[in-house]
Length: 351
Ligand SMILES: C[S@@+](CC[C@H](N)C(=O)[O-])C[C@H]1O[C@@H](n2cnc3c(N)ncnc32)[C@H](O)[C@@H]1O
Image 1: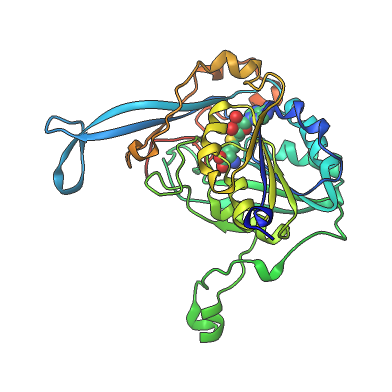
Image 2 (image 1 turned 60 degrees about the vertical axis):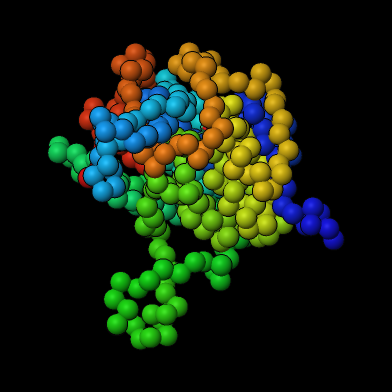
């Protein structure tokens, strides 16, 4: 077999996912992961900055050198929904329809909507199909002085059939014991399997993994899901693909993948990030942001030169649209006034 024939395939689609999902074949996907907007009531932004050495600059760096910050641009998308469940429900129904008989669905959310989404998924998949709520815990960003700081996301796992699903135990990555001295050298060297609480730092603003796309999720989290819940050669799907983290995890582990996002900037990021797998690209429907998005998102420039995106890439979040939205009672009830940002949001504060 030639390399090209053996290489996992990726299809990247620029579209509102509801324009794509109904046309995909029922039972076609072994693993579906989605990380929809969390309904933060904000525009998710990530400023991209470059620093140049300047004695009059606004920052102090290594060895006390002064630097000036130049703003290169910004990536952003809207995260405001009048009725979040109304938005999510038909997409959850599609996920259920698209799974293979032994397939698994992962829904990545945070405290704002996860409880409502759990009830929706219980109805759509069946309560008996709920397998786990995985808590992804990180410790980064600002601290609230008026409540416990929210430092975790929630990932719901549903199996299409609770009696028949993929769980590749041997593929689980091992983590160190907290007290290795208590378990003996052999066990300590092997490490232990994680529980349903996954400790993993967010994508480092300085790290190589960083794409500059807001709310990018760590590859490690997605690799664990891909490796344990699917097999090489299977077809996977992420229809809120963003920067393509799930796509990269799938491709790096020999799975085929379909990735959908309605934001042209996400497609541009994936074009660069997934180039190693030579994906196909297409646009379906208008291929641009939905009405709600176009109202809030002006045309933004896409930056090709990631090298110039300095280690000082900072984030900012605005809530300009928060008060303006006539959010549903449910949404209002769970959008706390001084809620601390979670990993899906962007924050420039540090502990
Ligand atoms: C939280 S981000 C996903 C981040 C991604 N997991 C990553 O690691 O980069 C949510 C994405 O959903 C996309 N999105 C929102 N509504 C959509 C829709 N109706 N159809 C397709 N994509 C949508 C946004 O453009 C955004 O890129």
